[in-house]
Image 1: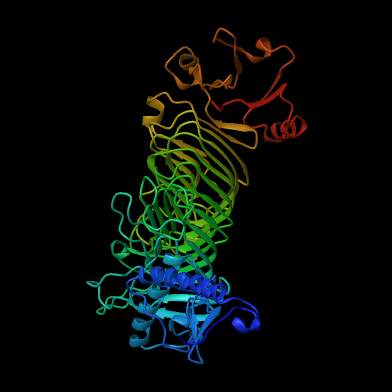
Image 2: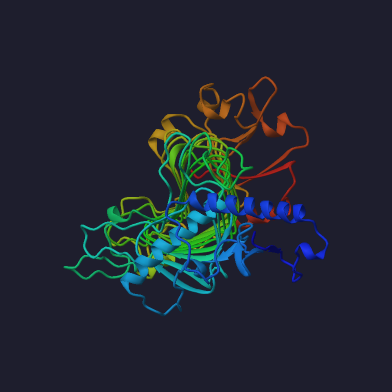
Amino acid sequence: MPEIETDTDTDTDTDTDTGQTADAVHDRFLAVEAMAAEAMRLAAASPSLSLPAAGLATPFLHSASVRVGGQDALLPTGHAAATDIRHFGVLVQGFDAVVSDAVARQNLRLMQDAIDWSAATGGLIQLPAGAIDVAGTLVWRLGASMRGAGKHSSRLRQRLQPRLDSEPFVDLLACPPVSGREGGNGYTLLADLILDGGWTLRNHAADREGGNWSYDPHRMTQCAVAFDTPAAGPAGPSAAREAGSDAHNRLDNVTITNVAGCGIRMSGRGENFIRGVELRKCAVTGLYLDSPDCFVSDLTSYLHGDSGCIITARAGNLRLTNSKMWFTGMQRDAEVIGAGIHLPDKGTAALTMSNVSTQDSWGPGLHLSGDTGITFHGDLDEAGGGRLEHQGFGYGGPRSLPRCFLRADGTLRRARIDAQIKGGARTAERPHLVHLTGSGVTGCDFRLGGDLTGVHPQRVVESNGTRNARRHNEVWFGGRMLHGQVTAAQLADPAHGVNDPDYGPSQAITAEGRALCRSADGSWQDAALAAPGLRVLGFEPWDEDGYRAALAAHAGDPMVWVVRYAAA
């Protein structure tokens, strides 16, 4: 029988000569053998996995050895917590290096091996500083994790680009197809790296030269990273043994750039987390959010062909904080929405956007076609063209969409928008403050402040449909009501929005400038009579100085109403 020894992580050799019985050594060997068998079983679960040649480090820990016939044989006793991508054979080069197509294709295969290993074992793929080019689409699997050396230090770039209009763009990190509860890619981590779609912002047609931002928007289907989780939650084999029914994908400290489409596209089950992500130079949008219950913070999204962020009706219960969307609507060849934040669906509900800024948007800072429970607190800067259009960016044809800081169409209900207005037109055409174009917009409260220097003299535009539907929305600027006054006939009409018993206001100002309060029986009375001690200070339209002085003197006093009488 050959001599058998086992070596652990310590430097001390242990054999039967040190006092251990043969049975003890045999038991230890069986334990090591069982661990090795489990390691190889998990590795076999990744069909495309090919281990490196002998002598290279592998994604397993060689913390024990077996001596047979005087020779040592290493046994893997577990999976490495993190494995450098170079151990799979991937070539990492400097940012300025140009790899061959053959190397980019080989990197694609080896990178997929690493992703499959991570998904099967729970190990983390570690990218060093430098650049990795791939030619083709990687499948970002359920439970995979990848971390670089920093959001400006480790780059993964797509090299497979179309040469003609007839050739499609390809994704960088795609989602496995979803079928029932199978497929999808929940419980993943991407952190501290650059995802580069490889697009150069130029038209790729061979028979014509196109400048920056000149391209066919219908061809822009690429995603840097796509997430899609079954509606009932992901299932199937994964290292994420203790995961729940939501997606829980996480992007942390990631830069996404040069994408011929969407930087991030999330759909399916939610509870995804995006933090400290930089999105730039995407042909459509930086973030396309189609997944509920997500958390987005410290996001900067800029230099996009269309809107900075698109939020669909399936993305309810969103928490968006401390973020900025700017230089949006850079497409010259087609008229896009070009909003800082765009809610395209009428059913979008329950969104909280706090300390959020939009800046330099071809379209409005906010384009809201939502439903209920939408709140916004932040800044709307240089909307409706502004500096972006002044510098020659954006659609060059005749504008059919309105110029405004905020556009509400569809069925937006009971939204609360609190924003500071900055900038405005740098040309003769000034944007309006609020454009209420949807006949279903009702019960919304827009509280604005800031600078009106670059704003159109007609602050609020209301469509005939909105008026005929007898909705009641209020637009205030600096404590002055610009829109929302009601006539005596409307106050007598129980179907008018101002008389809604559940959501209607308790205070109103008539078209003549009289301040009114709703009494206990629902009728309207003069505010000075209905509330003892309440004072109403009214100013003629031409008395700007007196009006502003009164606002400053009585700011925050609920017992003093400062109103401006409507012009004749």
